[in-house]
Each structure stands twice: as C-alpha cells, then as structure tokens.
Length: 363
Image (cartoon, rainbow, N blue to C red):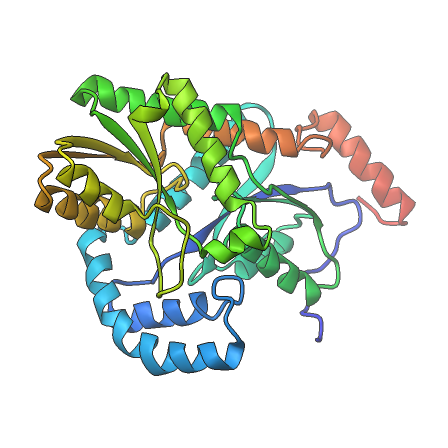
C-alpha cells in the first residue's frame, strides 16, 4: 500500500497534541439514498457482522440494501433536526465543550470529532490533524462499554489510516470507561434531576444496545461491562435489584442476541400491571436514532398499547455539564505525560531555538 503524501515538516516545531472523539456515524440526510450509502459502509464492516463475507455480501446487497433504506430513512426523518442528525449535533458539541474545558485548565490540545461510518471520517480528521502539525493523538471512542463491534472498529479505522501514513503520530486509545466514577455520577445525576422534575416510576429500565449472544461466548467483555455499569448506577441511585431491569435493544436478524430484549420486556411489564416506567440508555452518550426513535417512540408505543399509562424516556448525557466534566477528566487522565501544558513565551522560544540550532536552521 503506497504512503500518502505528508505535510511539510518544520524543524523546531513544538510538539502538538490532539484528542479525537469518535462516534458511530449517521447518514448525511434522512433520505433513502443517503441511508443506503451509510448502511452499505456500516454493515460491510466485519466487526459488525461476523458472517462469511460472500454469504453476507449476497444478503446485504440482494435484500437489505434494497428494502431497508426507505424504512430507515422515515425513522431518521422523525428525529432529524434543522442542524442534521442528533448524533452529529451532540458529538460535535461535546468536542467543542471538551476543547474549552481542557483549555481552561491550560491544556493546549486540539479536539476534533469523527464518525466511524459516513461523513467526517476518522481518516479525514487524522489527515487534518497531521496537516496542523499534530504528532500525538488520544483516541476517545464515545462508547463507555468496550465491544469489538464498536470500540475495536474505531481502532481498526485508525490502524488502517496508519498503514498508509509514513510519519505516524504517537497514539493512545481509551478502551472503556464503563465503571468510571465520574461517568456513573453523571448518569445518576441526570436520572435524579428527571425524578425531581417528574416523579419516580415504579421501575427503571436500563436499555443497552444489543449484540449477538455468541460474541459473549467468544470473549467480548461488552455484556459484563454493561452489567457492571448498571450495578454501579443502581448503587449510586440507591435502587434495590427489584426496582430496576437491564435490557438490550436494536436486535438485527434472527440470531439470538443478548437478552432480555427491551421492547418485549416493556410489553410484559405493562401486561403484568405496571402502569408507569422510566427508561434510560446508559451506553449511549449522545441521543440518536436508537434512543429517540426506537425507545422514545417505538418502545413507548408498545408499552402504552400493552396497558401502560405513563412512559418516561430519560435523555442521554449529551451536553450535560457533569458528563462533559467526566469526559474531560477522563481525557486529562489519559493525556498524562504528554506535553499539553502551555509554556511561557520565553520558555517556548528557547525550546524552539535550541531545536532549530541543533538542525542548523535559522529562526
């Protein structure tokens, strides 16, 4: 694989550090054609669908991409905002707030956001950072719980970019933060504020994104990390085991996925006499199609149709100040040892001069 062209290197250039916040991705528009392009890339990732390539190619292009885009586009249209996809809006805002928080604490780092699939790709953002002289990058996936289907796929994209890059920046990766005390505290505070404003339901359902059950048996830690997040969150909220339920949503295909499934659980609760429920999605740090449409529309409708009377969806962390603080503390922890603190002007000039003289350059 040929190397891509490198931006010009300047001797004496001060080290520059960046944080790259990576989320899953979104179509460019709520239209069938845009959704088809997005799904084609997303569902072609071997990390996402572990079916023999030739068989899956026939299913994907012969069935799924023929019929699913129009249906999915209608769902995206139901949550689309004037600024585009909610996932993009919140991820971009989180990156800006992270930049400001770190800057206030004298960390001179660039913060960019990228999507694993679709526009504003990881490769394009890494190219932009290199062009700006960045030589250290901390990669922060937006997924608190590690899964090969999400976190590892982000790392794959970074490695693929590195394969065609001659001067690779120093790289660090955050694998997970499912049990980070500040992340748990931010979730708990979000829920408590909702309860203070709306009252407390009889049951709190914690709905995580599902993955095929076989991934658990193959060694993926995702299920265990979801359960630990739920346990820690329940403890922070003072909930007894009988007052909360962990479920998994977004099943694709007919294979057995992690259970119990969210919507059938909510239907069973309503049919069993539960009148009011609160639902939160701790594994999503930004509201998106899976939370706003699948949970707050489809799951709500199913619960109400089965006899429920009150359904409360508790929004994701989004730009919640406590979450941004947690994210920043996490980044700060993993930036440790890198020269992110701004030097006084005299020190910076002296360091630059010493490096330039070493290489025979003139300032």
